[in-house]
Length: 259
Image 1 (tube, rainbow, N blue to C red):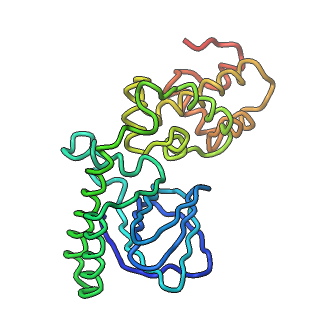
Image 2 (cartoon, rainbow, N blue to C red; image 1 turned 135 degrees about the vertical axis):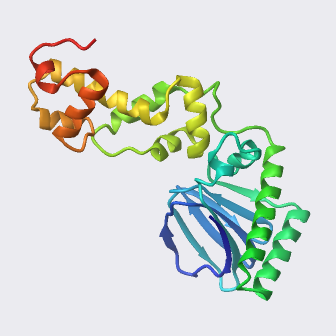
Image 3 (cartoon, one colour; image 1 turned 90 degrees about the horizontal axis):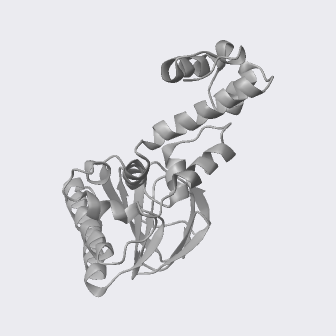
C-alpha cells in the first residue's frame, strides 16, 4: 500500500495512531506533531516521519496544508531484506524524526502538491510522485551516519528485561522494536543476527522459561502461572510446554526436570 493525499490539519489538537508508516510534509502554513512525546514543528521546509503504531498529536494553523504519504510496513521494500532497495528504504522509519528539506526536495514536494491539487483523483500520478519523494528522502538519509541501534549495540538482555517487566500482558514484535528504537523489519533482522533466533521465538522462550521456573518452585496454580507468564489460557501454556519442552504442567509440578 502506498497512498497519499493533500489535506489540512485541524486547528484543535487531535491524537491517533495507525498500522502504517506515514510521512507528513509541510506544504503551506505551519503545523505541529507530537510523536511519542517528541515535538515536531512543520513549515514548508520540514517533513515528519511517523513509524507505524507511534501515537501522535497533530494540529495546524488556519493556513496549513500538508502532504501525507502512507506506506504499508509489510511492503517488500521495507519488509524483505532481499529487496534491492531494502537497506536504503528501511532506514526511513527506524524512529520518529523530523527532516529539514533542502531546496531540491522542497521544490519536489511543492510540485507534487500542485499536481495533487490539479488532479485530485489521479491515484497513479499520486503514487508515482509519492514514491519519488520517499526515494529522495531515503537517499538523503542514507548519506547521514547510521543512527539508532546496530548489531554491535543491540542487547538481547535489554529486550529480555522488557519482556520480564511486561510478561503478564500481550507483547508484540512492534513493542520490542520500539524498545530498540528500530523499525519492525530492521529490528527483526538485527535481532536475529545478534541472537540467532527471531524476536517471536525469543519472546515465547522467555515466557516458557519463566513458566517452568514457577511450576517447579512455587505453589501457584497452573491458571495463575498461565496469566503471569502471558499465555492466553491454561490450555495454551500446556500446549506450548508439550510442543517446545516435551512436558506438561502437571509433570513439572510433580518434580520432573526439563531436559
